[in-house]
Image 1 (cartoon, rainbow, N blue to C red):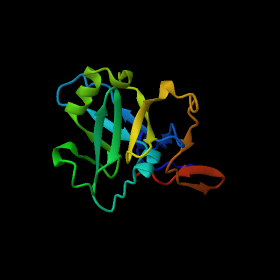
Image 2: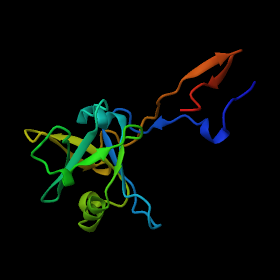
Image 3: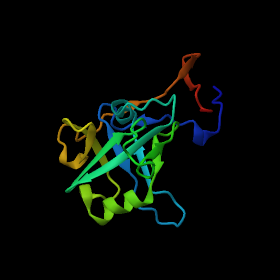
Image 4: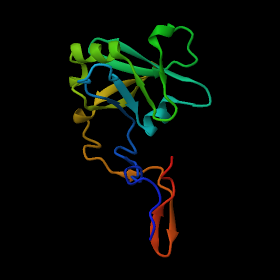
Length: 163
């Protein structure tokens, strides 16, 4: 059997929380020049209404010790400097001031852990709740995402290795 592609690029992405909308705040970068990154999983993009036909922007709101996120792509009342463009291919964005504010104020117990996006009634936004505080999906169920395979002589060969 021939396995086409570069071995390190043949891996299949597995979604850690397929049924839970999750925003991952990456740990503070050690090296200078590294990004202060935020990643939205596919479910979070879905509930935020991320339509990647056009640019998608999200914004954060801070009320007391609560953190909220909302899709502000078509919201003219939010200042442009408070909007962060979400990348189309990896559902992520970087913002050092927001990252540092969350960490400095110890919001959500931040130290690089995953956060669940929850709907807040009548606010038009989603409240971020630490996954550790959420009992309903304490153990992630892994689901293979974007796995296209071809069956060749009873052996499975990945066909999306160049995506």
